[in-house]
Length: 84
Image 1 (spheres, rainbow, N blue to C red):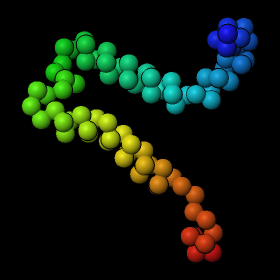
Image 2: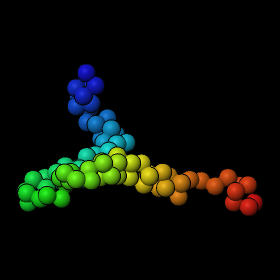
Image 3: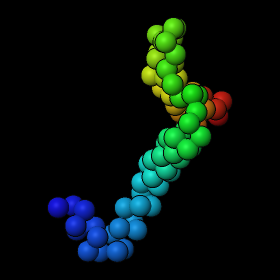
Image 4: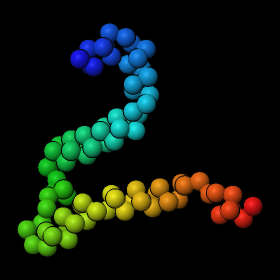
């Protein structure tokens, strides 16, 4: 399959990692958060028994809102928008 082909060619594997570096970073960050939570037996990531709906909606929609504003801030202005 595709993974076997990537492993057979180290340069292609490096290119694959370089193209997907943000995904690997996010995967590592998520794994670290889960690992820290398990290590310290934290209650921080537990969903509350009361008021769980706002917590759940925040969990689902907050990343979308953050990405929306981040994309909006990083967009390229057209010459007309830039006032040229």
